Length: 422
Image 1: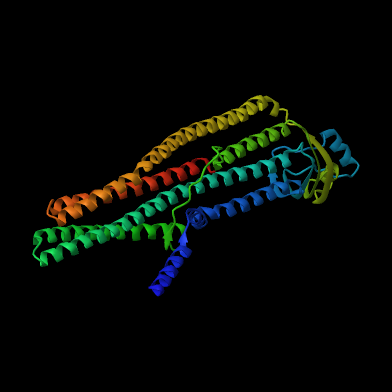
Image 2: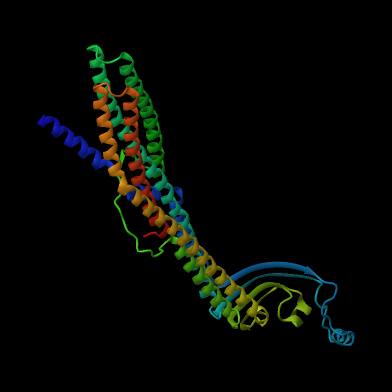
């Protein structure tokens, strides 16, 4: 007997050691869900975008080549050309076909904060995308909750089914013995046996559902689900820490960055440049009118530009950004309103199941006493076997009801925890 107890202890310990908690399943599901890889992609994309924007401070080099033909070119006046010819100079003028191969280099010196603003916008856009991804990933917990508590309910139903089988088997054996001794009808024994076999069949159906649900949950979490534990009772402080709140904050920060970039468009921009080309004609037009030879030409300088047109749309653009803020705040209010309604419904369900559970244990005790009395009455021939089976089923129904109330209450508690992310 002592050896059996030790073996049973180690079996139970092994099951508990491998049992997965709800939190473990949620974490495993989030790590296993393909959307988890989106974080790394968003981070890399944002880094590349910011790096590309920062390259706006590097010299911008443009290489070009062009060939043109024009119907008119610069020429000497006829009187001057005749005078030059008398002096022995051939002033043929420019040709109508012209050629140029060159490079332009522009370096920004002051951009009014445009580049830094664009980098800030890119970073905030990355944060918004990451927050949106977090919202989508958070919904995985809800799906885990549904499967986890359904599996818990099936486990309880299977245990109660086995207990019912044992109770029916005990009465079946009693009736069989009474039948062998001639104190009970064969039909009574067969009736209880048929009822037990029905319960065995139902057990096979429950076990099939259990295997299926365990496999689906395991595939969803990416781990083998050996056993699940009933989660402990928890309390929440009511504060909403859902990832949607982070998303709204990120969207507002993005609007702030866009407004800062909008102000940068109103400021002038200063840059230096250098141009160089090899071709014909060059900058020395008089020389090219005489020789028509290709030459090297270069120019350096500074350029100040100010887009006055940005002032035309600044007011409307700023108003559009404010409207985006207003829409975000409205979305936040709608989300909080719906969340509060959902919390109220869940809290009421928790209170309702708590009230129901207060009487479940007493109902079970009463049903057990009635069933025991029915067993005694059957032995003395006061009632028939159908009355006993009915009392056994009613006791089992009371136990099933208690299990359902407990699991449903736990589910509502953790659904409430999901609603607020507490």
